[in-house]
Each structure stands twice: as C-alpha cells, then as structure tokens.
Image (cartoon, rainbow, N blue to C red; front, side, top):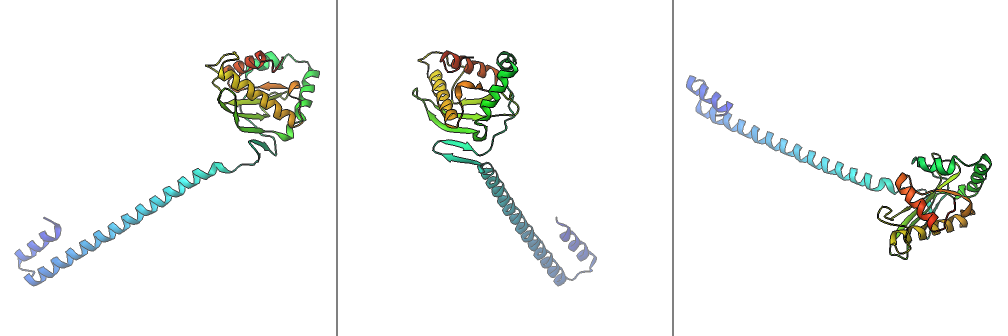
Length: 222
C-alpha cells in the first residue's frame, strides 16, 4: 500500500476527512505522480539523444584525424617537401659492423652524398607490383636517430622470415625488385644510390635478412 493511501485510510478512520475530499485528494496525488513520471521519461530521452550525438562526433573526429598529410603526390610516388624525422633506432649490429669501422674521411663522404638528396626526402612508393605477384610499399627517409652516414630504405609487404635468398623465392624477388625501384628513385632525386649506406629495417633480425639478400643480389657491396 502506498503512502498516500495509508494517509487517507488513517484520516478516514479518525473522522477527519470527508469522503468527497478523500476522492479529490486521491485524484490529485495520482495526477501529480503521472506528471512526474512523464517529466522523468522526457529527461531520459534527452540524455539518450545527447549521448548518441556525442558518440557520432567522437567517431567522426577519429575517422578524419589522420587524413591530414603534408605530402605532394606524383603518380604512385609521394615526395615530401621537408625531411622526415623517425624515432626508430638503428640496429646495433649494423652500426658495429658497417658504420663504426669507417674512417672519418669515408664517413664525411657518405654524409655529403646523403645531403645531396636530403631536401627531397622522404620518398614514398605506396604500391609497387613485383613480378612474383607481391605488391610492396617502399619508404626512403632520413632519421636523426640513425647514424648521419646512413639512409633508411624500408620495404613492406615482404615476408622476410619465410623467404630465402633464392632467385625463385617470391619474397626475395619482391625485396630485390623493390630495392632496385628505391635506388631508381634515389637517383632521380639527384643522389647516387651506389655511394650510400642503407638501413633496411628497424628490427635487427629483419634488417640482417634484408642486408644479406641485398648483398646476395649484388645490389650493395659493403
């Protein structure tokens, strides 16, 4: 039994509330309760609508946030107007074996050769179809976290772990053809691809495989 019914029953038992007044009181309380429920229902609907609008705005924001780019497109090759800074470190084994043992004079010559194309970097080749059927993505860039004598060439879409240095292996074919394409773009940018030192990947194992394949293919000789 509700509170207002208990109150009506008590007042009637005490003889303090005529029957007609009791009827009016009961109707008034019922009307007030119905009105309150309608108000609460309306507020709940407004909150749900506001939540849906907020969710849509969040989705739109995150969808378009990463679509702003500073690159200029030329065919399937994108050339940035300023050098890109990468935070990916150079594999330590590569620095020890190839970079640290160079003479100061040789290091300076490599830096000078790299500086010839530095204003044209980074260069992106978003889709490069190789003869083995694999489509790769190529990035050519310089990083302040790499030794200044090196240029970073990263080739994506190749399964380095399952491939092997074999002329019939599709991953090896994809890598070597993509690297030849990267060297072609470096030369177009005014550099000399044969007189540079390269980092092929940030992960040491992948870099070592790519480095071995490049030597096996005769694309580098250091």
